[in-house]
Image 1 (cartoon, rainbow, N blue to C red):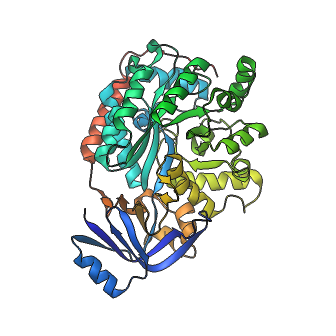
Image 2: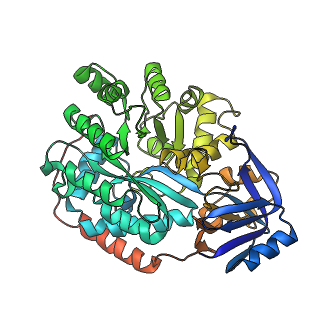
Image 3: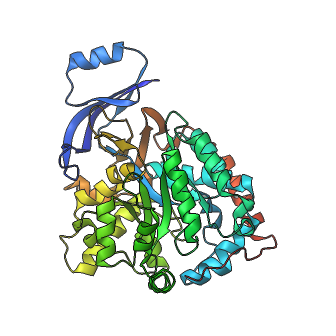
Length: 460
């Protein structure tokens, strides 16, 4: 693997393992990358740089007028739903699912998922995303795209548990277990897997118990949707006598020895928040979808103050319309400051932490105090560079604010994952973007142009 030396760059780095949300700007420093990790970061001596260059093949990057920071981790999405981008607009959540999304997916073919996921990987890499948590169908195809793209991913095959005729591709739970066995730890550790029951409102209790048993046996986590609406809350209380969060805890989905990634948690009680904090559940917060579908927004400040582990995500391109984590940072900060009437709420460092290290933790890429999401020696070299020479960056009073409230995906110039350059000067090095764009659009129009049918119904 080629070593990489970034010279004279400004870096946004987490400096303290004890306080990982504290970030600081380091000016005119160097970053040496070798064997997939950050070897050294700081003002490196001439002798160190000479020795580093002599060790073997290396690539030098001029980091002047760029900012380096940990790459983003997208904590919840449905990558192949790029094929449904713009297909279901201006609809409430129930009609969005029942009349458009689940109907279109009746025409989804296995190969479609590869091209949709490959398109998503192109988009995310251009936006500085180094890893994503995906929850969809035919996940072997997503894993194939991830392996080729050079990105990291936490992959869960979505299951409803209400009969094979309601599953995309008539896939059984056993098939999703096979997927986990085949792919967990693959691609030099860039792929991690989980089980993916859809949600407590779609999956029967007995099915969720089976999922928990398999997760324990496999030693993997669970990724699912939780508490997205008041309707779901009321139906859960009526059917199970418990809130969705309490229901899942009762079934063992939040067992302390198993990592669970719970997307959304919009409608939760104080007791639910306590359960999420006590069990160590990771919550994926995807505010653009909530705003677009008028679903309400999760009580993020309360979750954070209560010790719940929260990471940021885009959700799928059918509801968000893009996979831009820079936009998610911005929306998260702006919405909650306004909702609380406190501009001090959700400060810059906390936003950046939720988009980097917290996401890496939620996906299992940050363990035992050493992992992705931190720009520090000894950690995996998952590094992005943003070019700050465009007009919208000036004057550069506060580069952390620039990243959160100013930056565009077009500013992302370089992306390095596990020490491998995958984006250089804005050019993607691992995937054939032109071919992917062609195939994805062709398949998207084929899918929505075919006869469709309702394969399941959302009733909250």
